[in-house]
Length: 522
Image 1 (tube, rainbow, N blue to C red):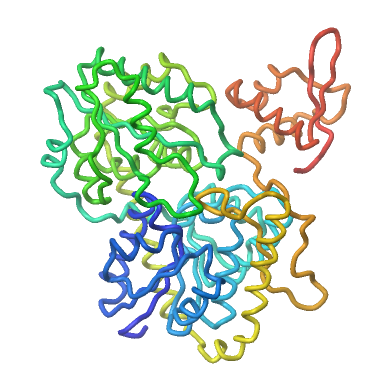
Image 2: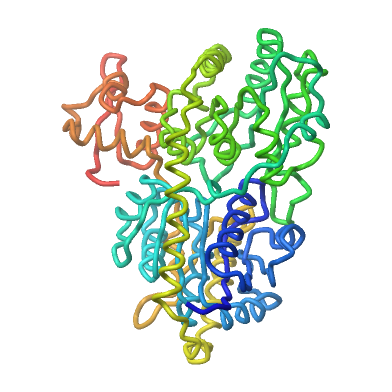
């Protein structure tokens, strides 16, 4: 391995504090454990935030627009000088094949490429599965942050490169800063305890897993805060992780501070509810969380940063990564189903969490920290065993226009379909990497919804295993709930989704409705 290294990091950093925690941790371990003489280039969702916060980064570009004329020469310059491209971390295997096309381009240019501590979501569309599989099978190494992601990639057909389950990179976050001063600056009002709250708006990337009535949800959270203030003599600190100052022109989501003000409007004792005056850095947030008596949160990295400090937690289960993380630390009982909210149900979990002494046992968290360190070992191994072949850069440079044309073609197709490629903060649009021979560069007919939730998969497999594959064997919703062992609300949502997909049909008889499978595969 060379003494002086150049590494390009591609991810969705710059959007929220959780992404910053991942990126900051990765940057620190690269400098401390890989090479002190390190040049880093970054492709990110919000590259300007990376430039503003991380001055050691030598150059940046937007990952979702890397192919545009104003950015492409700079990106090609990064690749020409790079010894390694790292794609990670976060839920980056999700159907956004623009990112996958960049990884294919990097490999084409002779640069070793690895996925580092990524999360993988279920992919339904054959278009998405094909090109994701094709891109990932070209990687030099893949590490994922949980076993579920490893299972999904193996089921996808990623079999040309070993997949190693490690842990989230944010477990390597540097020691916390003193949080006393930070807490004083955000008010405390002489309460008996301090409770952190973090909730977010819905993300289209996770619609396959969970959706909810946002007004009802925020009203319920406000009611819970009022109960906590009155019953527990607590002060609530709202923790925004994604603020409007990070907004780019294609970001349309509701930012965290807006949600915080919406909750504040329904708080009876406003002197017992405060919002952070600004968005804090990950290490500042870690220091602040160390002084909390309880954390109620939706965002994964709020929970993850707090986990090694023995803080009781209640988590809203809006995405697979929340369920996976709480299972990893043995605390899935403290998950709240966003599709079946109740004020009393949340309060019961709050009281139980506060009384549970098990939070002080941090053995599982320490184990995850060690597993996260394995990501660094894999990075070192790739650098030692794979060498960039920059001769390929000039040999394959004539193929770059095909990548550019393919991206623009898909933008055009999606615009015609009325599905803007910048509809949300994270563009989840299909991209066809360069094909050869008789393969088509792009097939618009393959664009379709591409994600199947774990609940849908579980229900489908349960019905199939039980032989519910014909009309005469149809079962009631109650029986389907029993077979799948899902909460009733989740089972009903899964049945509705399977029916929409044409995998399940209803049989109506004597005012009763039963269900049966009409497909043997999703």
